[in-house]
Image 1 (tube, protein in one colour):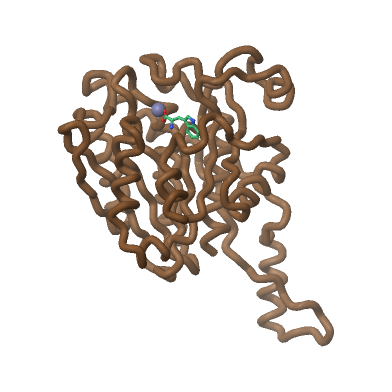
Image 2 (cartoon, rainbow, N blue to C red):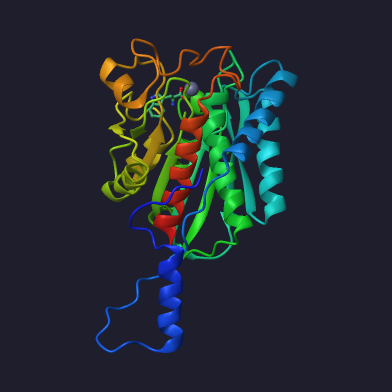
Length: 315
Ligand code: TRP
Ligand code: ZN
């Protein structure tokens, strides 16, 4: 769903600014606002279509998409094919964990200042016990759709955009650690921000924003304030996802999360709806983490917040 956010340059303001520029400046008038490209709506139907594909991949490959299993590689091939067709420069980075080969997928959008890189990433692997649709098909599908939307709109940001899908997160952030530890210090310093999306469609959702880099945090909070949705700081195990290696390396990080095995309180149910006294995700790390284990409203809002942050931080 497309919702306007206060503080964004509206279409009317852009028209006014362009009119001002083409007709000459008015003496004494305030400078025209900068006409930054407005963040697009991320179509939730497209995000859900990717989730359906991840579910089919799991079903066809022993019920999971875990590190070292066929379902992981098939998931990676699906994401990579979409990105290649859209014009991204993709790189598959290989590593070994537990004697099995793992992969990270990195996709660069050509253009922008490569000394200022904005990254958005998610882990593409799941646990062996289920298809991993909320954890973490949800983040993987939303990051994929954001990348495809960059291509569809031919977004040409000031900064350089890079998207990532990590392997072996469930084995201890192995893929993201591998990526960060293999960056030269110069390339690490070029990353202006890393945004992480791990579990963003929990069935009994909370709206949690990582409390790390203040600019990134504020960007997400501004989006949610604009749609009238309350947020809380993410506290369910700080450092338990792929932003941790970046944070340890000194890269500014942020991200979104809708909750795992913790219980929603009565106060949280009062502001967000859902069921108090029940986990945010009752199917966390289990066989019922299927396409039925997704709250569409949470997936939609978090996808739109992701797009807003990517556009806002890279413009
Ligand atoms: N990363 C964990 C997993 O994949 C889930 C998780 C727990 C999490 N706490 C978090 C994700 C905090 C993001 C933020 O199993
Ligand atoms: Zn998990």
